[in-house]
Image 1 (cartoon, rainbow, N blue to C red):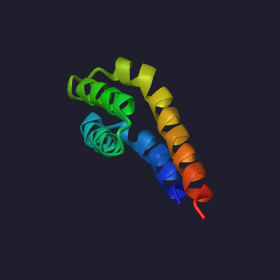
Image 2 (image 1 turned 90 degrees about the vertical axis):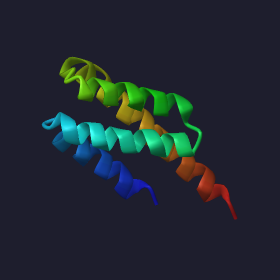
Image 3 (image 1 turned 30 degrees about the horizontal axis):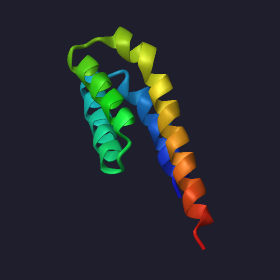
Length: 87
């Protein structure tokens, strides 16, 4: 169910880091999505990444983006696991 989303996250990460304006838009969307499902820590981290993109702080993004995306992927795996247990 979420496998395509996970692939899109990785593909967008590569493309977006070349353009911080697009990256800010992308990460803002992830922040909102995390907020909607009460993944507050991930939402706040996305907000930090968005602020860094708007400030053109590529160093912060480089240092934190991969770890953030791994956390998103783990969240997706956990959600899939729960959904697969529903009869």
